[in-house]
Structures are given as structure tokens and as C-alpha cells.
Image 1 (tube, helix red, strand yellow):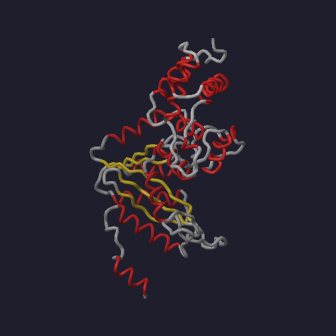
Image 2 (cartoon, one colour):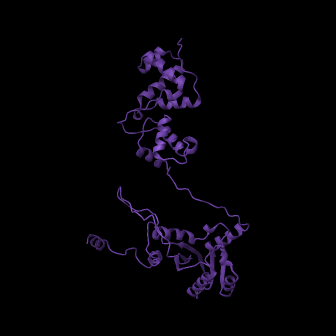
Image 3 (tube, helix red, strand yellow):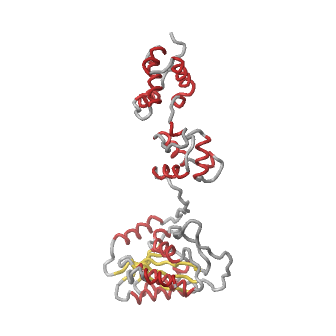
Length: 357
């Protein structure tokens, strides 16, 4: 009787050994899995060596490795050991890489965030892979829909009437008002004349540079905006101050703009100057109905997402010299957004000639 025999198999080990035995692309793993299964079947090591084409000494070595380290001690993947070979990884390795990438880095490496280089170093130190390039690691993560994302803030509403206000606004969004118009209003700002970072296409080694020192000597501006849900248009104008006086003037501008549209159903936040007595009195006298968003829930106001797009395409990666230039850029964007102009400002051949001159 042989003194060296494979230990008793756990259920998952038996299933994996049978899978390895059927591997056509890796004869080494297939042969070693057969050794363990034949040993568990009661065949002596001499007969096992004859069946799989190995020496009895090597059969005993494989069994020793399995008894000591399990399946990981007998599996072998040449693409993990040969630097010149293309990087290929089994489903189990890829699954483990994805699991590690989604694990808290503070617990694993004592740092607040992962990077591709640190993730690669950790995988190699832990013996998950022998070596892997950053690009191949990026492709593995991308194939599993694992991407680096910026965190966002979130604030829960503590308004006791949250659901009442929420359902009232949702009902307004879902049903067009007969004899009236649905509007969302809000203020965008304050807008300073400062350099703003952004993103743009660039060749390697060349990016736009913005001045780091500046003085805020031109004051600020606020954009009083209105989003028409029925026409899908965004309009407004700029003011120097945001208070009840300018807001009342804005409501009068809206009432003149929609003088023949019946009741104005307006969604707005609960800023203090929005609910001043003169504001409410003007709304009652001029057929204006307010729909207040709950406290800390301005995201319900649909104008917010349109302000986000306006900021991206007019303020990101800019350094305006004057408020007139800034306002002209925003009105130019609104003209395109409201379908009052095509996107082209100047044709490409003329632009190339002007830059070459």
C-alpha cells in the first residue's frame, strides 16, 4: 500500500478537479488533476504514473503539493510565468481581481483610494498574479464594468411635509395643465470672473494652462433662470443682486412673457426671499401658483439639471475677462439649446485659414 495518497476531497475541490481534467488548453493541469482523482480512486502510484505518463516520484510530489496547499499547489498557468507571453487569466483570477478592486483600500493597503499601479503592486505581493501590465489590468477592470468614479454629496430632506410636496410637484410634471403653463425657476450663481478648470482634447504633454493668481474686483452676477416644461426652453437674464426686489421684477418679467398663457404653475425652492409677503401678494393677484420644493431637496426642481449642462459648456475651462463676455457666452449657449441657432459659429475651412494667417 502506498504511503503517499491524496487526502479526502472537499466538495468544491472535486468539482474543480473534474473541470481541470477536461482542460484541453492546459495539459499540465489536466494531468495533475487526473493524478489526484486516480489517487482518491484507490489506484497505486505506480499504476497512476503509467496512466498519466509520469514517473512515480513526480506523482508522489504532485500528491504532496495537493495535500499541503490544495488545488492552488498543483495548478500551473504558463502565461503567468513567462514575461514574453501574452497576458491571459482564468475566470477565477479575473473574478478575484475584480473583488479586490471593489474592496476598501484603507483596509487592504492603508490608503484612501486605489490606483492602477497600487492595485497591480498589491496583486503581485499577494500572489494573485505573477506580473501584469497596467493597460491589461485596466482592460480587465473595464470588461467587468469596474471604473473609477468621483464621489458625490447627498443630503436627506428633514422636511416633515416632504412627501406631500414631492407628490404635488410630481403630479405637475406628469400632467400638462389646461389653461396654464408649467415653469421651473431658480437662480444660478454667484458668477465671479475667475479662471475655471475643465476638460478638453489635447495631445500628450500639452494642456491648457490657467492663471493661478487673480483679483475679484468686478463683483458678481446672478442668472435668474426659467425652464419651460411644455416648450423645453431655458431662458432668463442677469442681475447684480439676488433678493426680493430682483425676484419680484423677475416674476413681473415672467408674467409679461406669458401674458396670454393663463395660470403660471411655478416650481421653486424655499429661499427666504421667495416667500416674502409682497411676493405672495403679487402671485395671488396675477394668477401665479407656487410649488415649493422640500427643504434640502432642490434636486426635484428640473431646472437644476439644465443648469449643470449650461455650466459645463459655458464655464468649464474658461477665463473670461469681463461679465459681458461671460454673459454673451451663456446667451450664445441658450440660443443653441433653445434651437434658435445651429451649432456652427464659423465653418472649418475659414477657421483653418484664420489660424494659419
